[in-house]
Length: 288
Image (cartoon, rainbow, N blue to C red; front, side, top):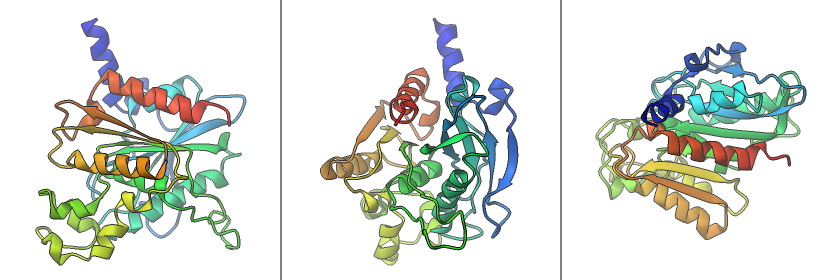
C-alpha cells in the first residue's frame, strides 16, 4: 500500500517525462506580440473530438515553464480522454497585469479557432493551474467572454469562456493585502508596484481589477479550489473568500482544504489527484 501511495503521489506532481510524453506540437504561437505567447499540445488519440484542458503554470507571474505539466492531466491524454494545452505567457518583467490574463484568454480563443485541426471539442474546454497559474485559472474562468464577432481577427471572434476550472493555491482577492501579511513581492509587481509598497499606497481600482473575486457572477462555470490551511504565501483566506462569493451568487463552487498543507498543494498526494480527476470527469468529460 505504501508503495502504491508513493506512485500515485508521484503521478500527481510529476510532469510529461512521467509518461514519456513529448508534446505533439511544441512552441505553437497563439499571438505575435512576444515570443512568450506560445503553447505546447499534448493531443489525445481518439476517433472523435475530445475535450481539452488548458494548463497555466505558476511562478509568481515572473518565472516558470509550460514544460511542467501535472501527471494527473497527462493521465487523461494517455487514456485518450482529453487533450492538454500547456501555455506560456508574458511575465511581469515584460508587462504587468492584465498582460498575463489577456494572453490566457487569447490562448483559449486560439485553441477554439484550431479545434477541428487538433480534434478538440470546442464546447468542452477547461482550465487549471497552480499559484500564479491558479490565479489566472480563476480569473479566466470567471471573466466575461471577450469574443468580438465583428473583429477582422478570426481568433478574436471565438469565445474565451471555459467549461470548468481547477485552481491550486491561487490568489483571488488583493484587498486582503491590507489585512493579512503578504510578504512575497510578486503580488505588487503584478500590478506595477515596487516590492514593499504599502497596500494603502496602491490603487484600489488596480487591486480590484486583478482579483478574480471581482468577476463572481451566477453564470460562472464550476470552479474547484484546492488550498492548504498552512499556506504562508497565498493565505487560505483567498480561497475561502472566493468560495463564499461564488456561493452568494449561486455559482457552482467546490473547495478542498488540505490540513497542514503549504503552498505546494499541487503535490498534496493521491487524494487531491483523485478529487481533481473526478471533478474534471464530472464537468468536462460528460457529454454536453
